[in-house]
Image 1 (cartoon, helix red, strand yellow):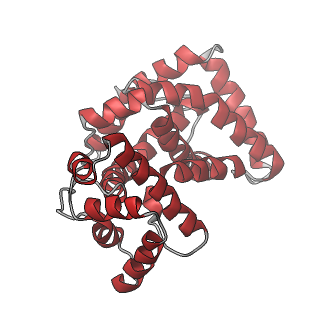
Image 2 (image 1 turned 180 degrees about the vertical axis):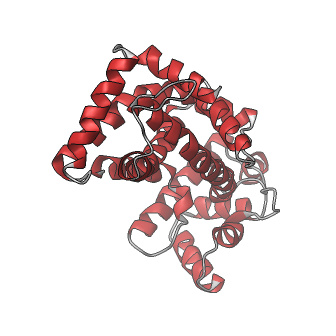
Length: 282
């Protein structure tokens, strides 16, 4: 059963006895209720819940257990949730990807937990069902499993979207939708300004570069691979890649100076940092 698997995961990570955790949780909830589950005392409780649950949730995301339980939970409610082998491998190997999902999941779960478990009193320390009562941590992990499904779907969709946009920003091969180069980036991003305005500013920035860089970028936008560009210009493949990389930095500097716009989806690291900042503020 789903609850048994979660309870086992929590028991393995917390040293205290489950009955003691339930008793301590009941006393704590009664105390926090006097403050309306708000204010400094509640913030302290929430931060401790976040910190204590983080290693449990990280481990469950890394080994795939959280995803498996989320699939079961969604299936019980007649909701489809599928995690591809590629996404599972990414979450196992990529700490940044795990953190991105974990932070967003915990932010959502803490809000749901406060409303349902505490204010609406769904957590019952005296529950007399066949498996007995669960501790607050087990209930919270339950909440995280439900929120994981929503956060994962968003993350997986953005991951596919980001790879398509990143390929375009690198002036690389065609994407599955058949778009290429800077015009493709413009179409893929949903940018609402007139294309002529965007392309004109891009051309102005490109015209400011050395002739070799201009030639490389223009040939790339026309669809030539690095090897053919190197042959045409009689330079090395490494020189082609270096010029592209330097020009990409020029574009980002232009964006910082508000000369040109770059889709937010391309700023993957910035998104992760913003998520961590929101978590710290919470």
